[in-house]
Length: 215
Image (cartoon, rainbow, N blue to C red; front, side, top):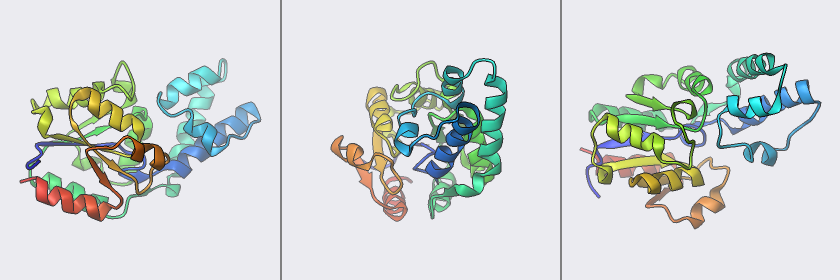
């Protein structure tokens, strides 16, 4: 399909390599307040709800302190995360075409904005939809629909780019095309089984595809 008229990106595992930071941030909190160390798999199992939702389930009287500690750690230790090499070139290409660019992430607004701002890529996005901005988190397609409606787009010409099963399911629910990227996916094998519309193993592959499919 030629001429996508709207592009939506996930953040973690797509725009940026943040998994190690996320693992460390949750372990910082669990160690300090629960005297417990989490495996990477245990942290991954938490993915879906926002950080605030998870922390509210964990803590009672210490909720406020735990939240502030989490966000402070996430920001101060953001050197552990990096933008996917070459991803900013893609954002520049899409931006130059005057095509609406959105974010749809399961992250809460605070961590999403920290990552985008620290990596200096927040300036490229016309709409940022986080887990705090929807009633139902991924794999619901609600966040994609917000983007489509905001810019009055034809769903057949909207592309969601993400690394998870949730991105695939959300895209199919919303009726847009899905490009799965697996250069930093924590669930690569599961993603491959779901047979996305498009699959990319490198940022360069995605760049070439977009250059051919947007005007």
